Image 1: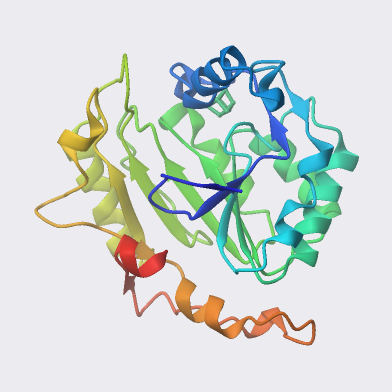
Image 2 (image 1 turned 30 degrees about the vertical axis):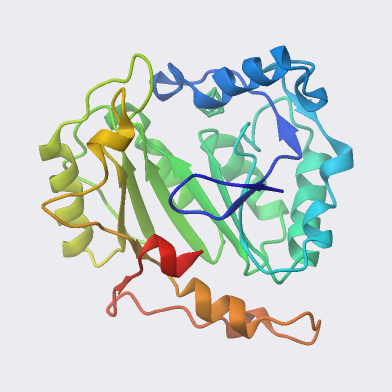
Length: 271
Ligand code: SF4
């Protein structure tokens, strides 16, 4: 397990590493840069660099992590990449179902394959499914996500590369926005972010502002209109304290916070 620096999750689990670029959001892919660095450092899991690689030995790790946590699945890949066999995706879902005390978050840009496979997969309540959308050209991914019967459906609008003035957020439970960071980071305009935030408020969807990004993301920070926006679709702490290592626990009892009672949690409270 690796503790994640990503503001909206806790840890990462990478039963797959490596990917290929699919849209403009991939241009400065962080995972690609990191995988190549780890390869140079001799990290055995990255011997293939950024080629799609399955790591069977990592599959059962979440079952060994006894402390309930929020886990981002495949931070170094895309679970629905065309080179990942269907049978392997099923195995990952099976582990997530067995590890019922954790909360898993999956994010993909391959929404077409996600939509195709969704009816064949078993969707336990502890799996949140999201799609990345960076501009108008990739907005179709939101419609694909609406077909998915996961307990929480979320959008990662990062790196945000253009305005999204007409977002239809029906059946979407959470929206995250962030600017690109690191070398070559592309600009995200403040008015794009405010416009998305306003649409979330109008449509009663929790809004999480991750970062402005840029070359030095620590310097640009994550304040929007003089405050942080850390809204979440459910109370992670409540969920985690209620789940015990007891298989009789019924996950459908997770107290989802109704959209009308928008929840604002700071990072410290969540982790
Ligand atoms: S889909 Fe994600 S992991 Fe794959 S290349 Fe694009 S940004 Fe990188």
